[in-house]
Image (cartoon, rainbow, N blue to C red; front, side, top):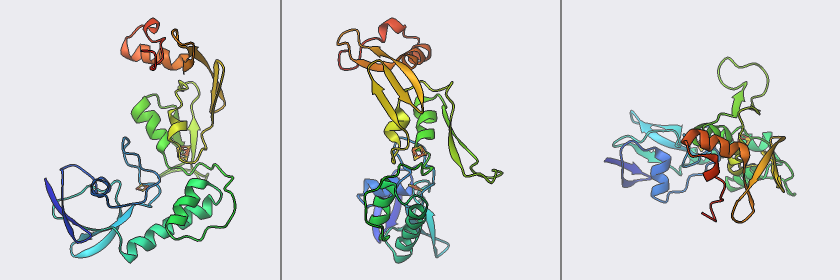
Length: 235
Ligand code: SF4
Ligand code: FES
């Protein structure tokens, strides 16, 4: 068990957790844009910044990927924290001025946001889709290119690997900006411009999953395809 101080209050937390998770468990609000509770933290948006005391000095750190340590002192609402979050939100807004998720985050952190209906669906490089595809689905159909050390001068972007994709749609569900488009109609689902054949439930007739996804589940689990042809509602 860890004993820490957050905003002057004593808090107990379990070992192996992060500052953000502890704050969330204690109902201390921290803004996030690239965090998801089921995924490894990524530290991309920098909205979750807090201050921690290190050797007697307060230092800024992102809270989603910072391990909580025993006796740590944390400040989540100081002027320095608020300024840093606002600056991170301003940078995002400057880059993606018409993307709703960015505008909402920026507004809530005190950035002056121009009036008007947001029309953009930019990719903000939050990495939620790549992490979901890798960590949860396990097919690695999405990856970052031109990001990190040794990258080219080109803007980082997400690369779609069509051959690996099973059309499950997890990336579209998790994307906070609507950049990942998925459309389903009849027996087809189109995602990242690739078209997938959908399978109809043997009981209710509803198209419920791409054939490639069911084949992949069958291969991974050893359950025969013939046993995967009923949707979850009819099981
Ligand atoms: S496509 Fe969406 S989920 Fe993926 S990095 Fe871009 S904004 Fe994030
Ligand atoms: S939520 Fe921590 S950096 Fe985005």
